[in-house]
Image (cartoon, rainbow, N blue to C red; front, side):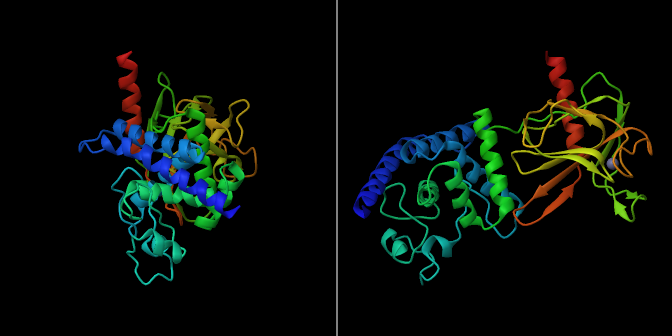
Amino acid sequence: MKEEALKLRILICTLFIFSFLSVSCHANSKATSDEESYQKRMELYRRVEITTQIPWYYIAAVDHYERSIRTVRNDLPRAKGITGIYIPPEVWSGYLNPNKNDMSPLSIQLFNGFGVDGNGDGKANRADDADVIFSFADFILNYGVDEDHFRLALWDYYKRDKTVSIIMAKARLYKHFGKLDLNHKTFPLPRGYNFTYHNTWGDSRGWGGRRIHEGTDIFAGYGVPVRSTSYGIVEMKGWNKYGGWRVGIRDINNTYHYYAHLNGFSKGLKVGQIVEPGTLIGSVGSTGYGPPGTSGKFPPHLHYGMYKDNGRTEWSFDPYPYLKQWELLDRKRASAK
Ligand SMILES: [Zn+2]
């Protein structure tokens, strides 16, 4: 039985090495556009899928999570290659391995390390895309390739519920849309309606004690449609004494988009639903500052907030410059038609 498993592993290794060679041949050009890097990544994920049966969107989700964490954490180096997965030296080589930079697949295995040789050069190199992504795939294979086992593998690796759910959400989005580029954005209110907004970041707020304003208020009439600005998953929907009727959507980049003071929700909107830029989520209102249903304590507006997660904590940042950019982009798109 054990021998069978080993044979299978060797077969998978070989298949993977073989398929990777054809990727790396044309993966060396320097000036890579976003589109090209999406293409290269997709190619790599598909090849991992073919050789390991791990669905491409699982690998893509882990890879994307790791890359995004590295852009917001100072203690991790930036991603340089095709993959964004970062495996610390002591994990790669094995905790008890005296040589933290060990590249020998055999001694790494002896010390129960994470690293394996994915590209067949005889080394398990932390700086090599194929070695890194195959090591992760190899780790997942210890559990299984279906959703439940993948989830378990993630839990054992990250030991943080929130990280597991963020990665699972990314996988759902990739699977649903069948592409890696899910960065397109739109302004929350459609063109053709009157609205005004100013940069009110950090203004103090009187109601409910000392708070600062974490977002941008977009003033518009009651009932003006409110749309999702991004691809994402509805993570929260309901009442809050400050925000009134509000919706929270998490996008592929781990950014949480918060829409508050809504008059109501769009019909059938539910937690867990997948949305895209322009999906109707509700309409402008003035709910909040009291028990459920409280309305009219301030002029109608959409409160729009953005929050970021770095794998440890969540914090808010100023949405105003993004709103300005998306409004402009919507106008350009409309005039191009
Ligand atoms: Zn506000």
